[in-house]
Image (tube, rainbow, N blue to C red):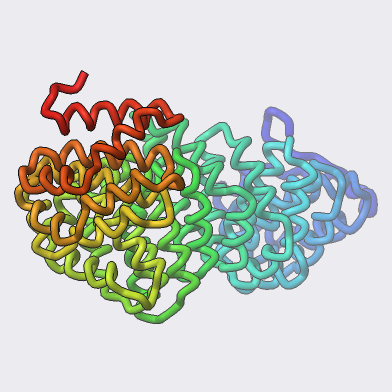
Length: 520
């Protein structure tokens, strides 16, 4: 285009020069003159003729179509069907002007847009994104066209049969300005409304790329960056959360990454996950339940996440969901609560002072119907005691008759479970041994510990943790008497020659406490 704004080309068939300026369209009466000039028929002939003239004709048409009043004459002249085949051209200039002309003529015309999809324009647009990724103007035209068509169900269906997801990921990574990011976001948001496309977008890695964008911009205070962060956040949630197993599984997989996990918590996804879970617990859709619960467990791992989840009342909502009669749901909810309590005294105190929860846990500790739930209930009880620092929690668990189950845990066939129970009982004994003393005697804790120390199959870790608990119990006169009567001293002396250095050290320390000496 010359500096004057005029476009010139020759119609060889009529051997005449056509001159046109878009600026002239603004002059009074020019639109009417243009319609009467027969230019649309001329353009139609040129578009079908010599490729060089066709490129210039497409350029002129794209300029004419900028004017709202010129769209109808373009449509009446059947220019759109003539333009569509030109999208298969390998000439980038032709593609650019043709794409712009079609986009402007069909903008906000649903019938024409539906016709575009019907005649196969979608694969052509995706091909432009694929073959001309380096051409910013062409990519922009293709993205704008997709944005205008993406609301159509027919367009979504057609796009689901292409590799548009991979192409959008590529252009999302390449986007260097806010305008490009915004248009890609708009296209993605529209496509995410379709389940099939949502799956493709997630599998193509869109959430991960969006997460990278969040990481890059989250510290920025610029208004434009804040808008991008908000849009990316909304898009992640839209992609990963849905009423389908795929959506829930996507977030479960996405949150396996620590950084993603933190960002999802910051985005407020937890309550949306719980809403999803509540909905599907009622409907009985177990696949969605499992996926949502897996995601919740992942989100409960980072310490920062635990704090935010507790502040937002997540523990209480999970407790309410425990009323579900689905064992798999109960199992994962118990695991999530245990993760929340891990290392968090506040969480342990909240959970440990809930009579209804403790009552339910003790019931599950007794169940023979589901060994997994029984084991997880015991582990949660141990975790609450271990991470708690409150005398009130110790008393609450004692009143709920949970202590005997923790003593039983010490004899588990799994060393990790035994150690969890031993550590929990040691912490509780340090907080309030007097409250626990009677339960320890009734459940024969001393005798259980002695058996662990005597058994050659007991792991070294379990042995020295057992001796750590024994040292705590020696602060009780009645329990000290039991320890002496059970002749644990002889076993401790034998352990002083054990092959494991930690066991030897623990045995020596426990003997010193037993004799009333100050441990070295």
